Length: 157
Image (cartoon, rainbow, N blue to C red; front, side, top):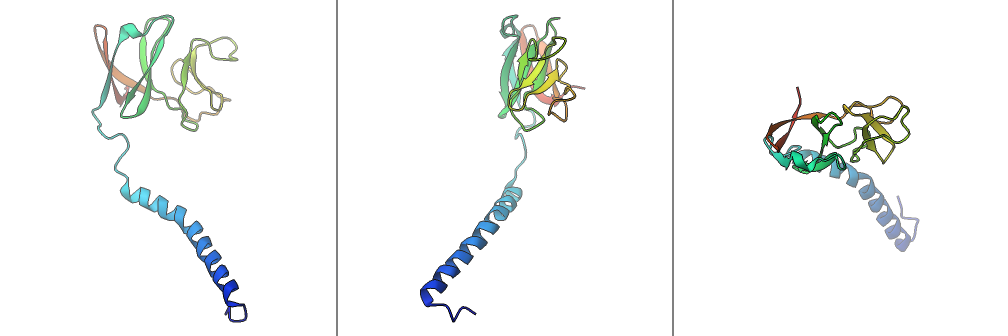
């Protein structure tokens, strides 16, 4: 097939063909290997994070904690109610922050803000229509014993 081409040129063309095939198949092999070696999402299903409710002050009403590498945001609202949410934006996975007043909200309202793509959630974690997030944040269950909070990855019912 390539006999009419000089030997050096054939070697170069074969090398280019092999490189192209490798570049095409490598991503597929990577995905298959990741799929076959997947061990589960968060590891220990009973993992919890502990913190003190006293850490949530009027000047700093939100605090981040992690459970198995999953960012969690715990918030003390204006009415002194404490709530915990997953802090991962449902748009593209950036970490959201709690804002006492959301930027550009009319009328001014509190909620969660994703600075990556300007996603907004209200104080209950529901995505605000017209912004990128397709789904609300997940509110998590926690127990409170005095000032001690124990947060789990179980959704609040």
